[in-house]
Image (cartoon, rainbow, N blue to C red):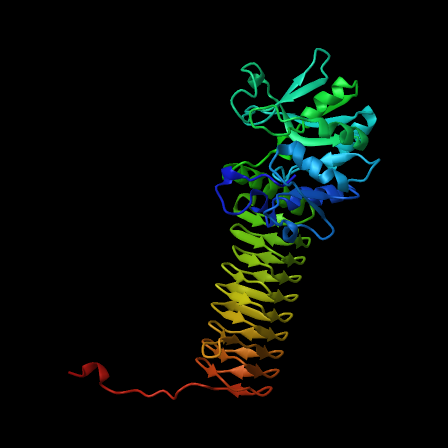
Length: 431
């Protein structure tokens, strides 16, 4: 379900499209459902928002024509569900549910022979959540919503067991009961939990599956909740990398997006951010740097204070050092860019060394176009070299300090492109 307006986010961006560790929030439960083995994943959205660009390929979408609550959302998506298979209902703003939790829910539902199974958890502060009312035998009787004054009594508001918004239904039972759910409540909405009441009245079994970890089912209503959920998601990501053989020196000062691969024995030092479509090889060292959609090979050294922008490739054994910025460039194996350089739109061969303050001047202000620089194998540039693209340096070439190179340099040649020094004696003594 992803059709909610999310007004408490106070944002022009729909709530479920807010980013969570590099992915739109709605993507998280979709991927979890797929990993759990879902045959079809249906995302129900509102008619004025197209969620398709944010969803993994192959996701089915449906539209809830009017904002008539959770029951209306499921009713809109139900025609696309496969008859005979359990229907698991997830919320796009409850992103931390895992594939394991979904599989356990389906297993519990099947074992109970239930028409419906709802996931519940116990919260110290249950404000805003629907309360789970149980009968004298401990079975689920109904869920009392708390969205508006009058939905719940004072006694019901004291209940700490809450509805997480996650359900598993028998397809036939849901198809029969859901259209009968009315809108006789303060919000005038179809509440999905009302299906449970109808099923109980028919003598069907309504089970509850209690989740001990509230973090799995924590919802997002505003940006404070989003920050809380992000902290949990980030910790999960970092712990998974550490268990896979990555050293993260200080998790509290490290940010790594979901879906990033990092090889064994790589060390991530404090103050590092790795995001986007990035990957890091084995035995690399990343020091206090910002990495966005870059590919880093084995035994690479990055930072401190490096900025690797989208399209950067650092091949095995290379180095991007202190205060180095690299964008849309391929740095060859073993090549070092030690410090204070900007390399943009360049192809750099293996075994080279780009001296301090080597700059590729890739942008032509007159043509408003960017051009590439080609640097061959084993090239050594001296300090304060500017390479004005498009320009090519052959294998084994050198540049002299302070050169502005505007013409191609042959292999194994030395380029000197600077004005001859002239000293004016007595200049400081002028009147």
